Length: 311
Length: 301
Image (tube, rainbow over all chains, first blue to last red; front, top):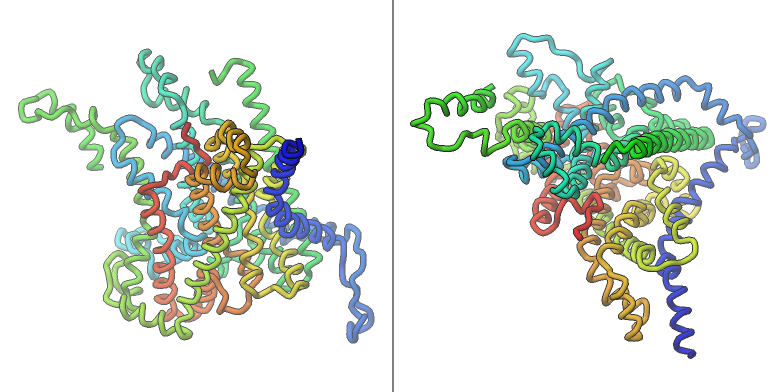
């Protein structure tokens, strides 16, 4: 009896015991910092007199002041617009390519698939900073093979690190780095489709393209939604690539992306309160946009299902 | 263009017959997908090929010779990199390895505990806890990193190895993967049988469940290893002493200085080339007994 009771107690307590490390780490390195950031975003430093001596600089309650400052800050708004423009290139191109490559890998009689799969996945193993650095050099007229070819052909040589082309240059780095991982996610769910599903379509004489469009893509819709969701989040938080390109061009300002502005405000100008408010806004905007997308996607899928669509 | 010609040739030649006793090429190879994938591979390998070749060039060759023509300066570049600030580059590489290996090991342990608990037990608050942990994925790294820095400063831990290591131990995606793998790999009747034999929950976990979860845990380890190795923002915020920098941050500071002195370009390029080797080698070696598909949570039934 005592053994049984002890055992059932052990079973009941066990999952909580197993989750202790994760819970402590979450509290210390996720919950606490987030709470602290929110707290800081409502604070500011009040300087009395010349700001000399102890007690001259005092942290006081700021209410929504930092937030109103952030929303009227044109630098932050410009950064947000730049990143949205950048995201409108990166997300469709990257996921379009990922889907295309996944479908190609999944098609019958394709050759060299293991090699190409690994090659396309390879950039995942390369740090964003190093990727930006490699492409950065490939964009520099003095060392780039593209300029060499353009020069030999007598074609115009655009400055890739300025104006409109800068968006393409930055987007290309993200597409290069992210396509492989997303391809693997989509390819994995393609592999999970049972072969019988295609049999009927093949007997009816459907071409591989028709099978891809009518059967495969609808069946991997959930993983497409998931990759879209995570790509939106990653895109809104772009930081490493523009920061790395900054030494190579004057066109990337210290506030090019919202995250870069947060960094500058926190460590450049030293206004951590303003930076905290901006970080909270970015986090909030990310959640709204990504979950808004997820909801819209789910509603669509459900409507399709109720119409008997996908199947 | 030549690939298109190949595609058309067999069907045209097939009619004339005699010399072509092989079946038409198009029948045996799906040409469009194969070529499409080869183009994709070319695009992905191009910058890597460039850095391999560029690292062999001396400073003057870099700007004067054709990009994809190997140069003669690799050993000199290596020598220069070794000499730069008494070989601090190798310190960065060792730091990256330390952060990534130790961080990923700890992360895998935490993920294994959590994933196993979430997958095999039914208990109050299970889904809530799981969702809260997962929500960590959605937090922009900067909203975490800045207050983490300020809190670390209060604990006098900034600019230490701990400040980079500790915040990366809990990986929400790792917990998520571990839960999926544990649910698929550890049958509940095996756990139940362990209980019948009177084994403690801890013993069941370490002796029965953990060995079954190994392939999944390798994946969690790799995922987190790559995430830490590639991380830039956290060390950028936490560290100021370049003896503790990881490779990403070290290369970035090198590039920042090099932007004004093209003589440093060769150092940056050689450094970037050497930085690419470990992870590429890791993936090439490991893919022999580990499938890429596992990375997206694929489970073999």
